[in-house]
Image 1 (cartoon, rainbow, N blue to C red):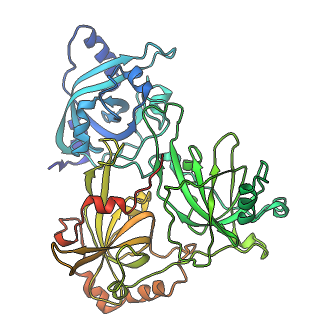
Image 2: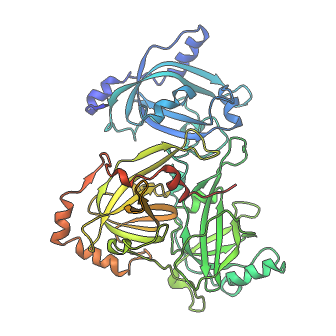
Length: 517
């Protein structure tokens, strides 16, 4: 187990002022077939990305070596340098031996020039290293700059040796990662010029089905009733797609509900701002036949009509126009469906059928550690994992907890904030019944995430559930003596010992997989 050291002692462990001349040193020794002297450096960042045809040209690697690679940002305490990790060392990342904050000892590096490029950029490839059992977690690296010879590309938030412009989350393909995903789009007033031409969703789809609608299609106004987790569809063979992402939404007005898909660069631009309940004005969209393998979410709106069409929102040809609209500026003539919830308490869950989709909320009393299993889905990379953890929440109706199995919901900032005593709201969760072997008796009931699950911490003023009675009851119960006694047994991390509640991965994977081409 790695041990923490103070900042001043951690600084002394590093090989001082070696990054400045590291590339030149490697180049000089490489020409005579020698290795560098062992060099201790701090790992500032470990970033994963999918390789493509450019990667093999840029690095000289074999196409059979790997499907994903890692860029490692290192520091000597004075400068930063970004390097490529050799494929044989990927296992050190996957076993969590190599991570941000640890100290490594470089043993062998290789400098590779891309001779096909006019820029003549070179890449430092780490061929061998030792992961020291030392952490320097509090060393301030924000003020450390890249070494003077670093290229613009090395300083950017883009992978070193591929044509794509995005990194993937370290452990899964569903979570957004990096600064491009932090963009916030501010809702605006509904433009007066658009009001006369806004057409009902149902009417637009009906005309399109009858081939009586010409482009550009009229503007539509709708509310987001469901938001799916982020979908990455990148393949090593697809070189032109710089941002191979999809964001699936369900948008509705009074005439029906239609699926909408944001493609490529629109995903990082809008993903953070699009929330369930947001009102959108859409223009320059395309309409296609709905993808049959895409699952329909359970929206708890019995009068809602689902339309068999799909709105495609692209970043070019043509570039879609997406505006977030403040609901208070919308005339009363436009009737939009509200977001309905079906919150169940712990007592009500006892009699629920298996596979029921519902919403739950409660006060967190247990937060388990993250667990990972290699993703064995057809077509998945061996560098991709299923990540999940167990969480217990309690409400005022029972002394027993609601057991949650939380997979990635493309909300890493929310997952990182889940702690005891917080109000946790989980929407679009699926009930799972766990039976004993050769037994019809129910051993355990828990809820797992689906493709449309959204998590919320405490009560947000703009949330669609803020007026639910159960929320106010939980807020009051959190101040009661009964809850404070229950909180005394709360815990974080550790080993989850309720073996009868551990389902097979096959069961849980199928509960929220989104099948796409």
